[in-house]
Image 1 (cartoon, one colour):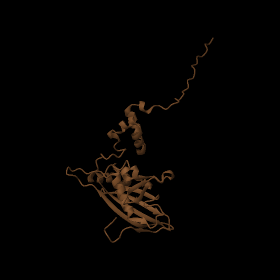
Image 2 (cartoon, helix red, strand yellow):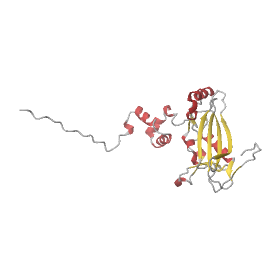
Image 3 (cartoon, helix red, strand yellow):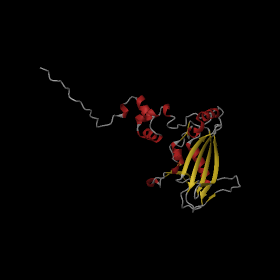
Image 4 (cartoon, rainbow, N blue to C red):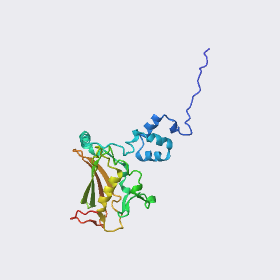
Length: 255
């Protein structure tokens, strides 16, 4: 007589109804997870969560948060980085996310100060002085640099192609202190340079958005000689608008 087979009851896994508490994880694992977050997420967590703030204050997040304590690369290090990067030198240095979101820059009145604007519909009327921007003193790039060339180019749309109608440039440079230390170019310095260049070339009518507008794009390039260039391209797709410089093209007395 054969004995009846013994079967064990099937066990099913029931997922928890609540998410696993992040703060219960070991700090080392928390840090590894946070390092996968983007800049804006980290800044939000740093502002609203005290427990996470203590972790984000660690030096391991200096890179992700573009902290101004970053030591700028020397000219020799920039040349070496450019050679290592080869043809992909446009990604050798990371531009600050606040700079990359160039569509929310807006010039109002240079006599009253420089303002930033968010171009979303519900926040279109919210203006923020640059001096109130939380990221203003952070490094404009990672790795940090002490010198960069800033270029603005405006293109006018034609039937089959865009025509370059204006180009202007500015140089940001930190000289070495008596101790031989060179500071990093900050977000505020790069923004002011872009604002200054934009103010030199503005539309005749105030109906269109101030320069730069929603068609602005920012790119970077690390040249073989170690020079770092930030370029903002602005494409004008309205043929009814004409632009003229706001300064005497034959004078050095810029705005």
